[in-house]
Amino acid sequence: MEKQIKSKSRVSDFGEVYTARKQVTDMVDLVNESASDVNSTVLEPACGNGNFLAETLRRKLDVVKQKYKKITNHRYTSRKSALVILWR
Image 1 (cartoon, rainbow, N blue to C red):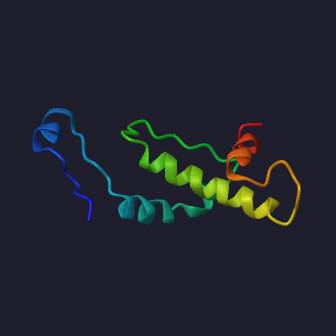
Image 2 (image 1 turned 90 degrees about the horizontal axis):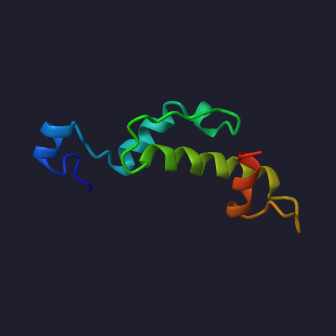
């Protein structure tokens, strides 16, 4: 299990608290409709190592992948290529 607090001095000096993957997943589940909407915008002003942004992007990419999974020989079938769709 991942530790929530990596360093007591970092918490007291900077308010820095690490959010474990399970907690991130549970929290993003609460706003899953918005998190999975490829047209929605995500703002994470205190992103630290980007756990919330990465989880949200993973969900958006899954939606794109599902949308294009039946299209064979299409240039947007891979996750890497699907990122292009999100930024157009």
